[in-house]
Image (cartoon, rainbow, N blue to C red; front, side):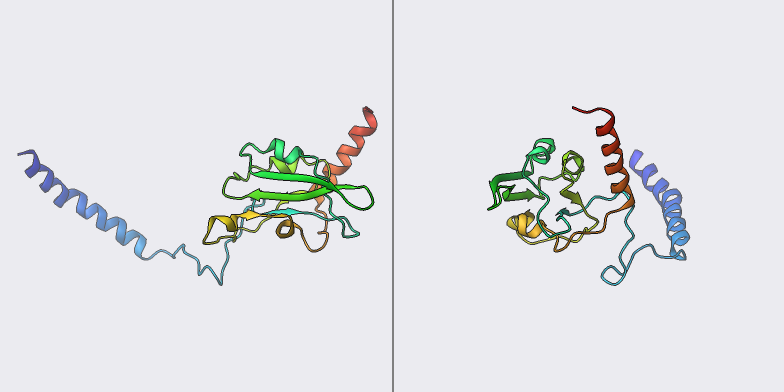
Length: 167
């Protein structure tokens, strides 16, 4: 008997409500995008693919201090240090496993040299797991990027803080 009432209820109450929802949305503007041609605008705080920055002279900023790897809660960063011919410390091996990364930005905040940053690229799909392990050559930008107002403010604040409270 319950099943008969449930069938009658679904037929005369729920079915017309479903049709009304369909009719209400049928004449609205579609929300889908023609993706390859039209890309969605990301929010200003979006964190995407990682990059390693360079100095203005083209040399690497990363000194392989290990703070980014220590700050990473997902343990997605692996690095090995070395020294170049001038005795400067740099990363011999720098790898980020993007399958493990949670894109929190802690590595960006922990880096004292401001060598790593999370860009706005969200198109980095691949068909195998090894393709998501990015090495230093893939992460290094080809030229130093222009500094944003946000980074300049942070650098200025750090400089003022260091002058007020010396070690």
